[in-house]
Length: 427
Image (cartoon, rainbow, N blue to C red; front, side, top):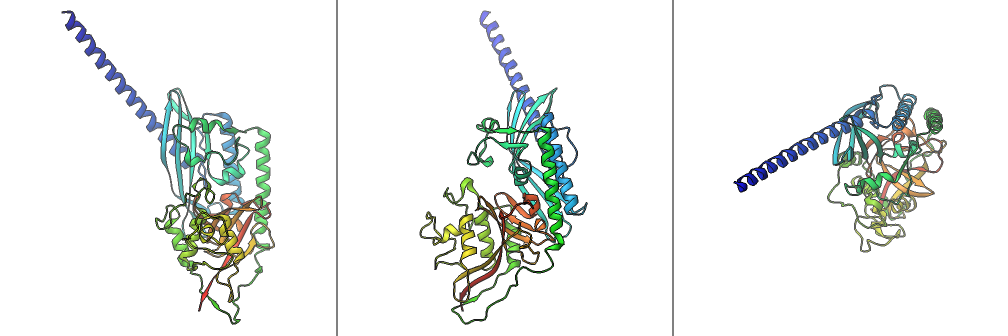
C-alpha cells in the first residue's frame, strides 16, 4: 500500500513539474513575441533613422526618453532645412532579430534594422542597414526599452554626448556582441542626458544645417576643374570608366556580399571585419578599372604578398581604406603611367566642392586625424555635398545622402571626393 501511495505522489509531482515547465515555456515564448513586437515598433517608428515618429510609449527610461526626443527633433529640423518636407518616403522598414536574452524582469536583444526609402529627386531607391543593442525592463507585465546602442554613424556623430562609449574604439564591435557578453558590453556605455548638453547639441546641429544650406548655390555655379584628356603621345591610353555598370553593381550588392570577393580576415587591413575598401574596389572593377601590378602604387584583388602593408602590394590597396586612398590619389595614371587616374578635392571645404565634380562611380573618403578610415562610392549626385548619394559596406548603405551619415558642414579636411577619370592601359 505504501508503495502505491509513493508512486501516486511521484506521478503527481512529475505532472506538476511538467505543467510548471509548460507554463514557464509558454510565458517565455509570450515574452519573446512581445519583445520582438516592441523592437520592431521602436525601430520602424520611434528610432527610425530616416523618418522617426513622435511615438514614445515603448520607452521606459525617462532620461533616454528625453534624449531620443531631442535626437528625433534634430533629424526632422535638419531634413526640413536641407530638403522639402516630403523629400523622404519610407518604402520598407523592418528588423532581423539576432538574439533575445531574458533574465527575470530584464531582457537584452540584438537586431539588425533595415530601412529602404525614396529620395524625391533621385532615380534609384535608397536604403541603410545598421546594428542595434537594446536593454528592456518588464514593469506591470509589460516590456519597455531602457537603453539603446546604435552603430549608425549619424547617431555616433550627432548623438555622441547622449550615448557615448566609455571605452576606446578598439573595444568589441557591436557585430560581435552575443548572449554571453551583452551585459558587459552595455555596462561599457555611459548615457549622458543632461539638459544643458542636449541644448548644446541642438544649437550645434542647427548651425551645421545652416552652413549646408548656404553651400547649395554659391559654390555650384562654376566647376572647380574641367575633365580633359591629353592627346600627347605616350605608351598608354585611357580605357574609360563605365559609371552605369558601377551603379548597377552597387544596387545589386549593397546589402549582401559577392562570394567572388570574400571579406579578408587579416586584422591589420580590416579591423572588426570592415568591408568598405573591398566593396569600393569591386565597384571600380565593375566599371572597367584595370588591374595594376606595376610601379610604386599597385591595385588588384590577387597578390603574391597578401599580408604586406605596402603601396606596392596590390591586395593592400584593394582591401585597405588607406591603401585604396593612396592608390587612387597618387598613382596618377596617364599616357605615360599605367593604371587608375583620380583627382582629389575636399567635400567639406566650400570653394572646392561643385556638384559637377562628383559623378556616380567616384569615391568619397572619410578621414580621422588626417588618416583615411572609410571609403564609399558615389551612387547619385546632389544639389549640395550633403545630398550626394553614396553606397557602401560596413555599414550597408544604398544611395544614402551623406548628410544622413554624419557629414558635418563645419569640418575641414575630413571628407574627400575622388573623381575617377578612368584607367590607362596598353593601346
